[in-house]
Length: 210
Image: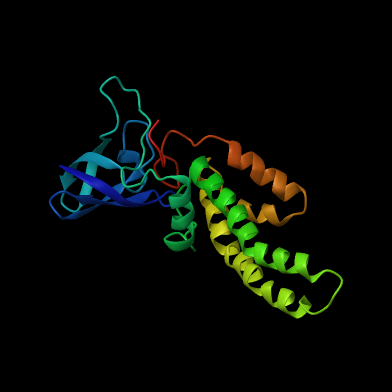
């Protein structure tokens, strides 16, 4: 029988497989062979014993016994702008899963570009204001939109930082380090430059093909 791992509790060592026969089977992590972690989304071959699965073999393991890099087939390979849009629409408060370097840097790039664009009207008005105070109230009002935009980007930014940490095998809670002055920025810069783990980890399959 073949199926797909739906969930796995690393602490309890128990998980759930959705079989191709549309039935669900409970399994133990010790029954998974091939040296791969039983992460959600992993296709497996197994022997059904009533409501349990035994002799579980990940289908990504080759006959040679070497485990190739497994990536999520459902993870879209997007361009920079598409990654940015997905972060603020589909992944706004989603800190689960993994995010590759391209997704992280795409968000950083367009965060800067859109923020600069949002502040441009303010700078233009201020350039015409000169020493007079006539346009100052208007300029102050024009600060509202870019300020709200920056606040809006905080939540998806934290969610993305969590997924980027997951991608290198670290806990998403470490994103709180980014709020520490000086140290936090350097920490996230290092994390943003580390390549994805090619193999599945506790947080899911690799977000790209290796």
